[in-house]
Length: 116
Length: 111
Image (tube, rainbow over all chains, first blue to last red; front, side, top):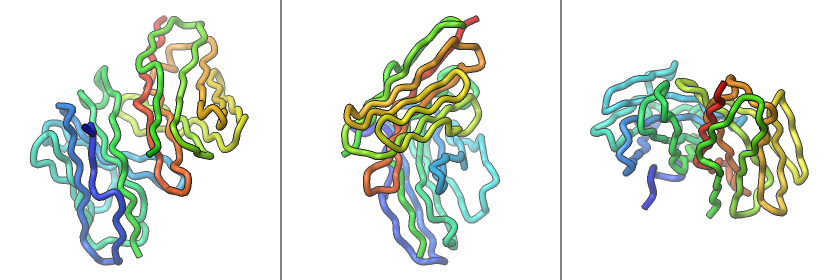
């Protein structure tokens, strides 16, 4: 059973479209995250949710909207896709929120988004 | 499918001691990364290892890569409290553009 699963694995779409990436964790964790992997393979946090509440919202364009229907799911919806949105997006979860003792992250397999 | 295993998953060590974190991966790859994560922060890139036998050092940390053994090590020399963090290795899928992460090693350095 995959601990953190995200779908789709690959997403190719045209500029201007709206798309969603889904993430689910079956670890019973309270906190979930979205990271963006840039061209230098550096992962930058975008959002963090703890028990369905938004905790971290880095300077991400308003076109990106996370949605957490319950603490096991954190979906990422992107409106009006732009070329610069092309990247790999990783979902992750942890038992506690960042800054608390057990901050180890469990990563999903990533979604490679290509905007044409 | 590429799998990445790190061990140990948790490491508690005294200041001044040396230790090594291991990262094994299951299929051929030509690029391996080590990241550090501090509480409340994004992952920070420590090292990128691009070839067999590559060795990189920064302060008290030294990383090496053996592509034949599919093994990377992160060696900590004379640990200090500031090194307490979670360390991830990640491997580039060959012909892919995605990283596969290890489970992470929580390092706690005690005074």
